[in-house]
Each structure stands twice: as structure tokens, then as C-alpha cells.
Length: 254
Ligand code: G
Ligand code: G
Ligand code: MN
Ligand code: NA
Image (cartoon, rainbow, N blue to C red; front, top):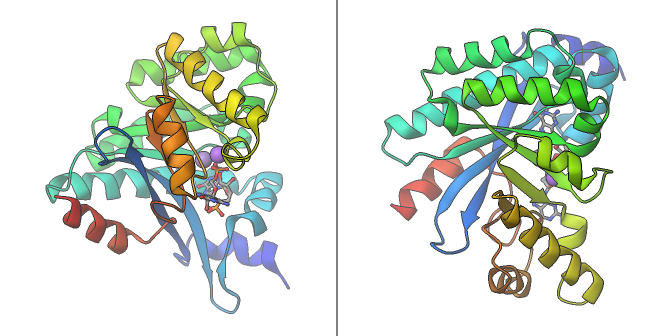
């Protein structure tokens, strides 16, 4: 199969689409944000999940134009929900290391916000610990520029990488997303339960919001609520769904 060649043409053939997974406030039960997750509708293979092509796109650099498309499309969709009176959600997008290394990253994000006429606080950029730790001083510079633009910043998969607490304090971030590997066993493994509770209080001491990822059961949700976690994302509430399905969910919640 020529997946790499097909990937090169997928953008202009408009084969990518975004799915959206809701993030729910544990106090109000409302959807307050969504994470945009790319999908590739391949003409012969059908729906190709990101694990099959994101790594490849990172290696050959295609992640840069693909990632720019993701940000543009996500901003446009978020504006559409706002215009339809369906609320002011935070739209989170994943950023890869290759994108973070691009000279024109900040300008490219600014131009997507302008094109969609979206206020910057409704866009959130998800970064991983390894991405920001690779070159801390450069990362802090870019994060400051992104904050000056007005977007929200989060650390994805928190707890799986190596990030020193002193750096965490220096990064101008807004949100920590607790990796789902810790959330998975919170109701059966006391160590994971303790780790999650500590991340929540760490986040709050640094005045950050905290989102638990991969919440699949009501018992996990209850533990997280009791331990003051702000938001949840996971199959218990919803899988990532199409824009139309998320629109329906927002209409129902009105
Ligand atoms: O639903 P899930 O299979 O969507 O996503 C699998 C992985 O692909 C996750 O690690 C997710 O962060 C990554 N991913 C999904 N969409 C994007 C995207 O638009 N850009 C990048 N860089 N990674 C993405
Ligand atoms: O790596 P990142 O956190 O960006 O990607 C989110 C990934 O987690 C996506 O692949 C998404 O489909 C997946 N995901 C979201 N909710 C759940 C969940 O409750 N359980 C599991 N196993 N995966 C989830
Ligand atoms: Mn993510
Ligand atoms: Na994650």
C-alpha cells in the first residue's frame, strides 16, 4: 500500500475530517470544551485512525500543513457553534513537535483565528511534556508569544513524560490534562488514586485547571469529583464524534 503517497494527496483531496470529544465540567455537568481529533477518510481503506498516519506525517513533515488545516478547521467549527447560539466552548487541538519547531507557528495560528473571526481564548493548544522539555528556553519563548496572542495552553498526557516541577512553574500554561493511564485504575489501584489526587492539588496550587482524560466509568467520575478535579473527558460521557453529532449534543444541553 502507498499510504505515504496517498497521505501527500489527502489534504487537497479533502479526505481529512475532525471528530470532537466533549469535555465536561464536573460541577455543572455542562460541556465546556471539546478536543478536535483528526480522521482520514481514505478512498479504499475507509477511516484510517491517527495512530496509522500521524507518526508518518511527523517523519516526512506533512504534519505541518496537515496540522495547519486542523487548526483552521477547528477554529471555523467553533465559530459556527458560537454563531448558532450553542455556547462558547474551548476548542483544543493537538500540536506536534514538528509544528512547534516551525518559525511561523504563531503567525499561522493568528491567521486561522482571524480567518474564522474567533476570539483567541476559545482556542486551546495541547502540548506534550516532551515537546516543551526538548528545549525549555525556546519553548518558554514560544509559549509566551502564544499567551500574548490570547490562546489557552495545556499540557497533554500529563504525568507520562519528564517535566520538572520548577519548569512547570515557568511555563505560562492554563490547563493540565491527566493522562488516561493514571485515570484507568484510580478505583482499584491506591497508587494511581494518590497520583491523580496529587496532580489535581498540584494544578490548583499553580492556579491551573485540571482535566482527567480517559474517564470510562461512573466510579472514576465520582472519585474525580470528590477530589476536586475540574473537568472530565472520556468514553463515559462520549467518544469523539462528528461535528453533526456534537451539534446535536449541544442542542440537547441547551
Ligand atoms: O482518537 P485518537 O485515536 O483520536 O487519537 C490518537 C492519537 O492521535 C492521540 O495521541 C492524539 O493526540 C493524536 N492526534 C489526533 N488528532 C491529532 C492532530 O490533529 N494532530 C496531532 N499532532 N495529533 C493528533
Ligand atoms: O493523546 P491524546 O490525549 O491527544 O488523544 C486522546 C486519545 O484518547 C484519542 O485517541 C481518543 O480517542 C482517546 N480516548 C478518549 N477518551 C478515551 C477513553 O475514555 N478511553 C480510552 N481508552 N481512550 C480514550
Ligand atoms: Mn490530546
Ligand atoms: Na492525552
